[in-house]
Image 1: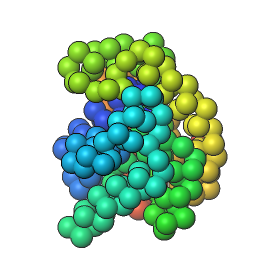
Image 2: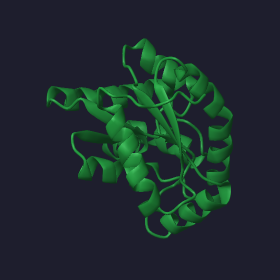
Image 3: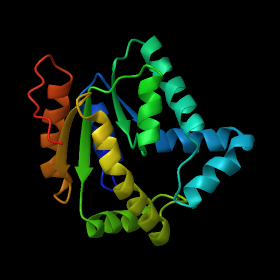
Image 4: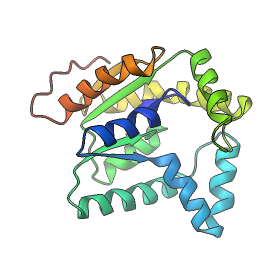
Length: 194
């Protein structure tokens, strides 16, 4: 699931995983925040990158993500919703180079105004270091710069769909559920739209 900050990736992925198993929701940001809490030596580099609105090192992201996927594979799970990954074409290339394949890419998009409003709402509920207006703006700018290269990287390798997330969750969710369900069946009725 690709999308700018506060577009709804986590909300939708959590709900998809909860209501339509066998999907496993993997939020790379949540994994990294957990890693920072668990290991003092990792805290400064992970939180420093997040507080600056930047990217955690590719090596760290790949290691944490691969470890988590391997745990689920060992438990028999095969369908993963990668929330917020990749955030750069370098992450996408490295993931592919290491032998991991992506069947489909869903780009959740919304206006900057909608994402900023959602970020401010989330900031009032969660205590995340990256829920500040200036950090949100930097993350959105960086995402917008990286997105075309990420999409181009997956051209011909994975199915691609865009979903308009300016709409309410209750409108978007059924459409998204149908898209994800189609991806994990033999009938990939998707048109590559890049």
